[in-house]
Length: 373
Image (cartoon, rainbow, N blue to C red; front, side):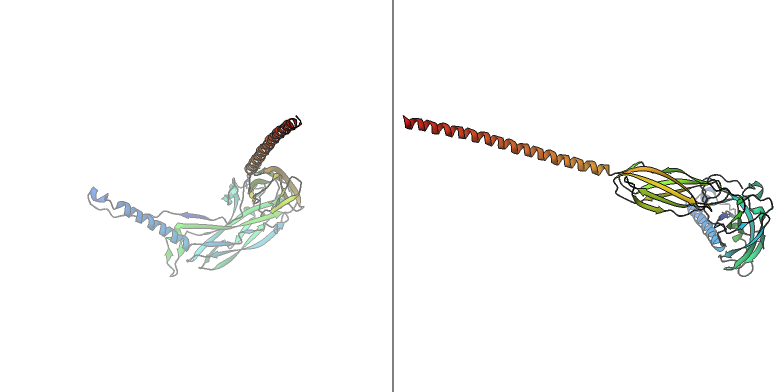
């Protein structure tokens, strides 16, 4: 199995392949102007709607569910080289018609940020991670009635020379369309054979031995400056181990004084060997003031290894601060102007009082001189 740095979601791999319906019309000898009448688009629309309705009905008739969707992701299936283990899988026919299913093991690859694993042929798989060739499914074919649940055994036979670490495959269940499906009355449902649904269970097997466990945090990014929140962040975790990991990740926010103001626990996700998975989130704080530090801490592996990475950012409502400064400066300028005006008026009044006092003294002096004379 070949792995590339990518994202793998542990979801059921389901593929619907619908074959187009073929419609035939009887030949007529009508003139050309009648064949291309204005009602032709209406007829084509009705035909298209009939095709969509038919395909939707077929998909409702055939419906399978695999239980569980994944098994062993908690490292519960740990085997030694040469050891054999048997696990039970189940599949339910949730459709309206009986169906014969075929169950087969298959390897898969993960491409860039794919949401589901992509099955590949056994010949194309990298034996380093391959598991399908170790699996034997019993029974490989069985018929299920509507609502019926069937059990099957997956026998895991680990080779003596198996490499230590994780090995992965999916057990795929799909209708056996060689004979179509049967209606309730026992007749063949030829329309239902036009749709093939594939569901599966992801199997995780760990081969015991010397296993390297290593993971790193990359591309931790967030806005360097924000006026207000929320503040988004994103980072990637790259798994360089020989086994899948389920890291426990915490993002903490510290203010400029080193005080922790927020701690966020992220959901754990499986990361396969030599793949990377992106994580996104946001700090929901709306208002902040100053320089903050965001630190992402990840613990993983059987020994609880810890990796961390931090980035700084500003959360400052600069527009509001500038507006407040302008208002304050305006008030200060107005106060200074008013104060100067008051001081100026006081100075003018003092000057006038002095002038009046001088005039009064002169008048009194003149009157005194007259009286003495």
